[in-house]
Length: 145
Image 1 (cartoon, rainbow, N blue to C red):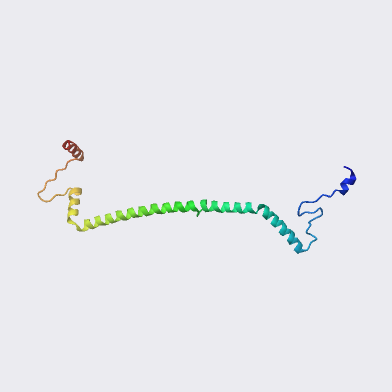
Image 2: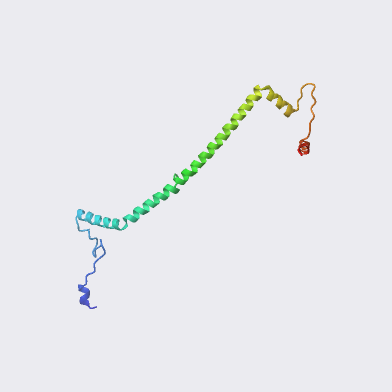
């Protein structure tokens, strides 16, 4: 290349830049905002769909795996059903125990049964014969065949 070709050759700066300072420095504010708008719309056309897709992907992942997401909601529902089942079981047991307490306070047959079995009490004239439980099993197995 000779020196004359170098002088006639014009090098264009990249979009939005000039060889001497900022291209919009000498322009009016309206012209500068138009250049910025063109640059924004160009970037939006180029990267907008990707940015929106990435944003939607992040929101979906957060809705599924987040603190209050779908999986957390399912886990909480499972805990609620477990607690409800335990509550129902405890309410049944509480009802049985309340009935047993009522029987112990008011039913003479229940009181007598508890006194005879637990404390080995007898009515006057009765004799209590205590047989060890090991012999109960032996007697049952001998009588069955």
